[in-house]
Length: 213
Image (tube, rainbow, N blue to C red; front, side, top):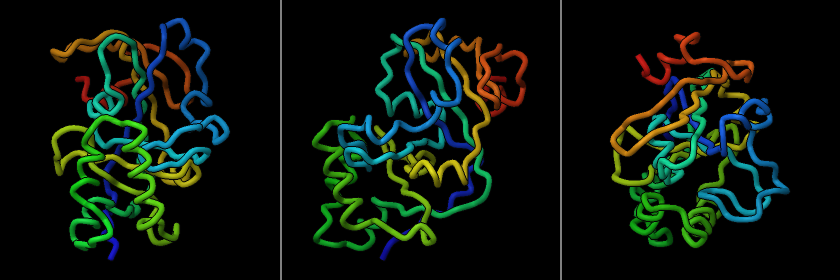
């Protein structure tokens, strides 16, 4: 039996590294889209080569953990608002509850909590393909544990791009130009809903979404 998680979360977040602030002046909506299938040559957490998938986290700070952020390169964290409630298959919880000998759920849980490697990604994607491919009218995506210590408050979300664009709406993004492991983050710039680069001080709604008060 597949156990589904009802998504009522207000916002989800994605993170992307960039080289320097000057390059952001050239960014537009395409820089926030999913990678095109022909550019995907390796396995991701739940996608095989040449398969598009969009990944989100329900906590903005956790997105930095997911990309193994080393506080050396700047990043952009994008926020997406849930337009309507939807359901997703909870991969690890389903495997635990079903106690299915075919699914090594202890290994599966550990695979998601560790940093990505080609071997781990191939394993988690094969599990999704074999046991958790569901009709789109039954569930609209997959949820799975975050990197690091397990927490009921944090989870990741994977969705096909077409589904994500139907259910999630871009709200803007913040630019972290400098940061350190002690929690310091310099956030001066942002992108508005129209993907235009601007100063964060003029967007109180973005400051609220990212808890920058």
